[in-house]
Image (cartoon, rainbow, N blue to C red; front, top):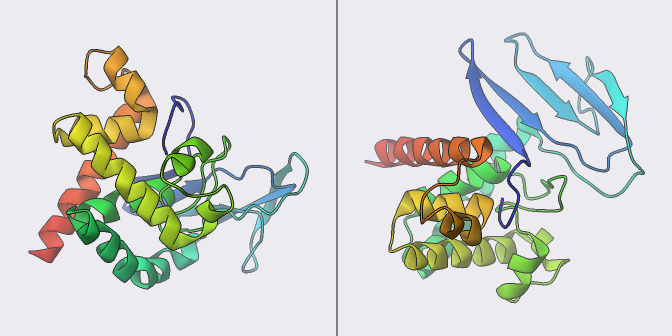
Length: 210
């Protein structure tokens, strides 16, 4: 997620009891369901894909919002991997780094949307998308979303002298927040968790590709 979003949570990936719990914030969905599988993994959706989902609650007015689909995460990773690699190499970024950010931001769901309006694989806010020539509607296109998000990440790395931790903190909380705290990771719990999570994903991908 980008820009000033200190307390917004999108998709959480937590290892709990040996299983991966995936929680997606469903914004603007009228009906929310949840499902717990045999391993204890919990999924939230506004469109049940199988039996066993239970109604969790209702909220807001219906809009075309798609929640994170845990079932298709690995399939989406394979589908968008060539696009992620191409976007990274165009900007001299490591594909493993871009994969890590996409995984943390949206879990490879191109339809993911946060409650503050960040959308797509790299969770672009309207202002960030506009900065890189992408329209509000264009943010929903995976290729445009990746290109703009990768450009933003590259520019943040340059701005913070290639300090990856600060660049990631800025991607989550906004570059002004990092500067406000003396070019340090802001003391926002979400941002601190985000930086740790992306670095963990990054190191995992580096290890698996070596």
